[in-house]
Each structure stands twice: as structure tokens, then as C-alpha cells.
Image 1 (cartoon, rainbow, N blue to C red):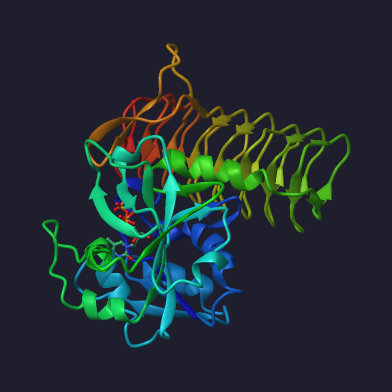
Image 2: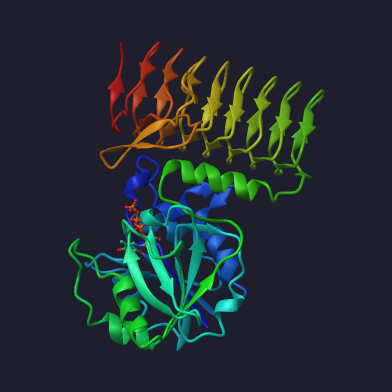
Length: 398
Ligand code: TTP
């Protein structure tokens, strides 16, 4: 048994976080989304084929020493079906296929006994997804793409078990209207002869597409951590709840950490810093005097040295915050924060801060309104209030 993990997508809805890395490499709960997926399959399969393309070097560098991982590059044509076809001459007779951007709880053993199967998740809003209709024997009999009137509340969860036969179907599939060879078109062929089972997934499942999905999955994964303190803890530090502090991290005097939280290797917290639940400080970050971080992912090498508040935010690598940089994460009217996703203004969640790319610098007293995005390499000058998205490589000043 082998596994194919689809990692070649462009992750456009997650700009600016995907400007310098593919979506599967966004860190959630301290490690890339893809590492969470690999951990789910590595004991079940002999080989794990990662189908890569966009920013492939980031994936290859991180996983190059994994004994089961091999890399295949998707060709010119886009689409999940074409991504699977990339592995045609490599995988064994039976194989699992997983999207490279899902965080899920359930185990996958139950798929292995079927020739062809797909994972389904029960949701309240099936109209936003690919809906799957089953017969009494759990055979998939119909797929509906974002239907106005869904025939079931089960959706395609992006995990499949196939036999080699699917390649024969895929190689004859023509690109869809959006120019992609779609895996679902091959599945439709299988449904004609009732050849594919639908298997319901239990527990948490999230298809990471939008920034707030990352924070939701981060919260879910952090609920599972157990306290493990290997770093240096100075005097008068208060640690509550489940907290991981890796070796080489330092928590300086009079800081407070409320778990669940992870402080990675080389990170420095304090003196007098306040780390609140659902926060991850990646490697070599610095959160200094009187800075407060809540419900956020701060990627490696980012510095937040003094008098800042960062709430419900995702901050890229190598950013530097000037003194008193502040994020707002809640509207006065308590309504969901609106975010621009691929040109559309979308309601997100009640609390959402800033979504920031890599290498951003802010001057002193910079503030961000809820849900704004800041592209990589931008500089925000002193005293600016940012209430709109900032493209990458932009210098904003008063
Ligand atoms: P999507 O989430 O549909 O696409 P994406 O990752 O490019 O994100 P966005 O829509 O924000 O641009 O893709 C589902 C999965 O399939 C995901 O794990 C990426 C993978 N994929 C490929 O490997 N190759 C492809 O050509 C496409 C379209 C997706």
C-alpha cells in the first residue's frame, strides 16, 4: 500500500501566507499541515508520494530525509485528477490519496479494506462543498458540486482509497471548464457501476482554505498537547495549562504563559511578556517586554520586542514589529470580521486579527484593523493605521 498526497496547488485563497511557501507548509500547532498528514499515514503505507509543483523546493527541503517520502512533480496541466495521474507509474496496486491541506482526527485503517472508497464528512452547510449521495449500502451514487439544493449533508472530505483502475479512467478525462483535470470526474465514472464506497469520518475535520481555518485547526491540535518543559525558565514565571517549551527556548522573568501554547526552540519570551491560550511561537521568535500574544501563530525569526498586542493573527517569518504595534481583532458591533478572499469580501469569524506575509517591518505605533492582510516584504511607517489590505513589497507611510 502506498499513499499519494496532493501538494501542488497554488493556495491562492491563503495569500499572503502562501507567497513564499505552498499551503501544505503553513505551520499549524508548530509543524506544517503536511507533517500532520504524513503522521496519519506513515505507519499504514510503504511509500508516500508527494505531488509537488508550486514552491516545491520548500517541501523538498523539509521532507527530504523522511525514509518513506518521495517527490513527484505535477506537469503542465492543473487539477487534482492530473495530480493523481502524476503517480501512475510509481504506486502499488492499492493506494490512498489525500489532499495536502486537511487536518483531521479519524484513523484511516477503515479505508484499507475497500477497493475504492472516499471519506465523507457530515456538515451543516453542504451547499458550499462537493456533496456526495449514497445508497443504502453506502455506495456513492451521485456527486453534486456546490449544489443550491443539496441531496445530502455529506461532503467529499479529500481522502480516498483507489485501485490502479482509476488511472485508466483518469487518463481519458478531459480538462473541465476551469481547465483542470478533476479527480471528481473520475469518481463519477466509478459511481456509475457502484464501484466506490462512502466512509464517514468521525471527529474533527477541516479543509484549510481560508486564514481563519488555520486558526481553528491550530486550536483543535493544541487541545491535544501535554505539558513538556525543556527550555530555560527564569524567576517568577507563571505557567498555566498545557504548555510545551522546547529545548533552547528561554522564558524570561515575570512572564505569564497560559496554555495550550507552544514555544519552539530558540524562542525568547519576556521579561514581562504575556502569552495567552492557543498561541504558537515558532523557532527563534522573540516576544519581549509587555507584549501580549493571544490565539496566534507567529512564524520563525519574527520579533515583537516591546509593548505590542497581537490577537487571533497569523504572522509570517522574519517580521519585525516596532514598539507598540497593535492588532485589532473584534468589531464594535460584534459582527463577523470581513476579509478579502480572491477579490470577494467574505464574512469570517467574530475574532480575527491581521494576516501577514514574511519580512514585514512595522514602525512605532502601527495599528491594524481586524482581518487586514499585509503582503510580504512590506514596510509600514510609524503611526499608520492600516484598515485595508496591503500588497507585497509596499512602503506605506503617513
Ligand atoms: P484546492 O484547495 O482546490 O486548491 P489550492 O490548494 O491551489 O488552493 P486555492 O483554491 O486557495 O488556490 O486543492 C485541493 C488539493 O489538491 C490541495 O491539497 C492542493 C491539491 N492540488 C494539486 O496537487 N494540484 C492541482 O493542480 C490542484 C488544483 C490542487
